[in-house]
Amino acid sequence: EVQLVESGGGLVRPGGSLRLSCAASGFIFSSYAMSWVRQAPGKGLEWVSSITGGDDTTYYADSVKGRFTISRDNSRNTLYVQMSSLRAEDTAIYYCAKGRYWPSNAFDIWGQGTMVTVSS
Amino acid sequence: QSALTQPASVSGSPGQSITISCTGTSSDIGNYNYVSWYQQHPGKAPKLMIYDVSNRPSGVSNRFSGSKSGNTASLTISGLQAEDEADYYCSSYTSSSTPYVFGTGTEVTVL
View 1 (cartoon, rainbow over the protein chains, first blue to last red):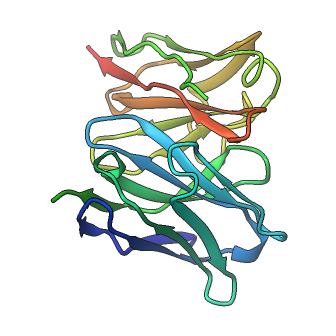
View 2: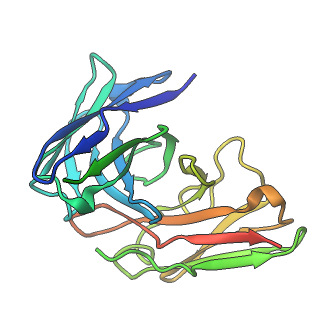
View 3: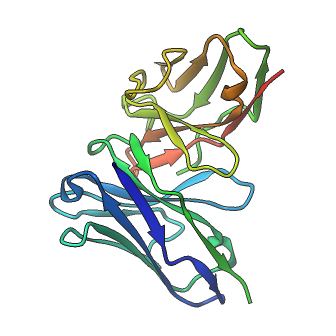
């Protein structure tokens, strides 16, 4: 079964750091671009970051550039995002998503999401 | 990169057809055939319904169809059913430094 499972969310103070993980199974992880998409409470979807399959080129939304770092470990079939200098506006459910093919924005598999709350 | 513009809400009766618009610019929808649509039920992860403007993934009902004209993409749901009640988001590839943008989202209500 093709599956993505996120973990690592939680409560963090403003200015703090957190690393999210996304464990993939059921497909050749290294061959596909992977992305993080977030959704603030009661709000819409916001693309956060993507990493291509093959050459691991990375892309970031302006709102997180310089604070978030996306990476992948193909030997562990796992996607990561290291989040630092967190702000209240980063509070959201973070989803990882598999790209159908690059550069199409067809995210055909999504995880269940992990909640990140930035609050003092 | 600003979010694509969608109507906040659209409603219809069972069996009817509805269309959700998604307006962008020549830097995104108008210049690329990479438009996707997602359905999201409350408390659930989004689900891909349409990709590359008008393609349906395996398992998605043929009641869902997509199209594009100029800078505006559209999702049509025909034969509206109670289970179609959800939020819908469009997305496009963009020529900016950030490759993807989502729409503002549309709440579909089945009357």
